[in-house]
Amino acid sequence: MAAIRPDVDEFLRHIEHVKRVSPHTLRAYQRDVHHFQDWLHATEGVDVAAVDRESLRRYTASLHGQLAPSSIARRLAAIRTMFRFLRRLERVDTDVADGLRNPKQPTTLPKVLSVDEILMLLRVHGTPDDPRFAARDLALIELVYGAGLRVAETVGLNLQELDLDQRQARVFGKGSRVRLAPFGEAAVDALSAWIDLRADVIASAKRRPKDAAAVFLNRYGNRLSDRSVRRMLEKRCLAAGLTRAVGPHALRHSFATHLLDGGADIREVQELLGHKNLSTTQRYTHVSLAGLQRSYDKAHPRAKLISDPSQP
Image 1 (cartoon, rainbow, N blue to C red):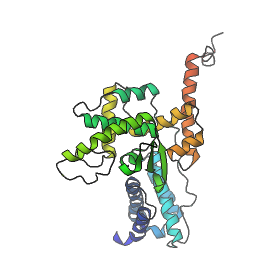
Image 2 (image 1 turned 120 degrees about the vertical axis):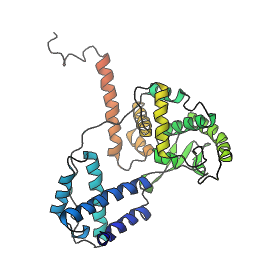
Image 3 (image 1 turned 180 degrees about the vertical axis):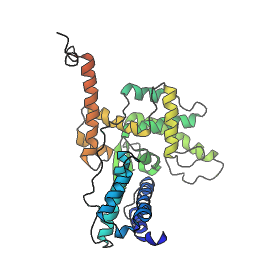
Image 4 (image 1 turned 135 degrees about the horizontal axis):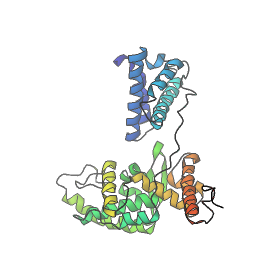
């Protein structure tokens, strides 16, 4: 097994140190390309440099029925990226993954909270036993919803990247792209309240914090993890009486949808979200249109005539 790893390991070092992908993305690439490599070794008896298109098709076929279409698409994307890298280095004669197509994806709309549900989430006192972390949680939700940040971008923020006077954060997004994310007065007030209390969190920590520069800290004075954010939101949804628990990405989806509902230009929303391609942002227009259709069906007197042809 060790003899067939050098090309793959070099590719992984490239995306980690040159492309500077996030740790989460790196782990996903590692899982995907190692799975492909192990399948080739066990099933085809070849290494990555010797694979042909037929082997690649057989591997793709083996994934159907085992993974969701979105997971298959992610795995094939990793393989395509790896073969482009190997072709540039002339480790392979041809890019056998060129033209490899993803399976058809089901049409799914992002989970979005209504404005009323967002307000319910903000008003609930999620951490009644410690006002410091109640302030932290409120500030985090206000920032994620107010600026449309990803959870990794939020927990990765340091104090020097936050400008409360200008109401903006310097955010490191996917692909090491940097953007300035503006936010509103509500987020400024909540962040100011938390920042006033975070020094006490560091001072009361039993051990010296590992990363005290982070904006959002846990009880030990260390950087808050994305998993902790998800757990906090689940508990807060329950405390708010929401009928469904949502993750931090639903707040980002809600940010985009509410902006479009309010008349924002889609390209402006693309910039605010840090999307590389407009097509990624366009799915939020479907959410807005779906909400518009529901309102029409509920309110318009002729909305249901087509679905009930027996009526005169």
